[in-house]
Image (cartoon, rainbow, N blue to C red):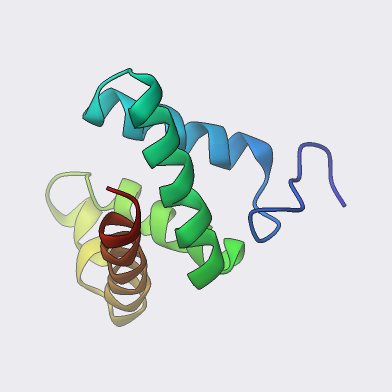
Length: 99
C-alpha cells in the first residue's frame, strides 16, 4: 500500500479523498453538514468506481477543459466519454444517497 492510501474508501489515496471533499465543500458550503455530505459522497463514488477509473475520468475531465483542438481528444474520444460518463453516474448516485 502506497503512502497516503486509505483502506476504507476503496483504496483511494488520502490525497484524492481530501481533494474531492475540499472541492465538494467549496461548492456546497463550508459547514459541518457539508463535510458529512461530501465525505459520504466520495465513499459512495469509491464503492462504485475503482480508483484507477476515477483517476482516468478526472484526468479526461481536467484535460478536456483545454480550449480548441487541444481539448477535443479529451472531450470527444470514446474512452473519454465512457470514463466521464461512469464517473457522472457514480456522482449522481452519491448525490441521491448523501445530499
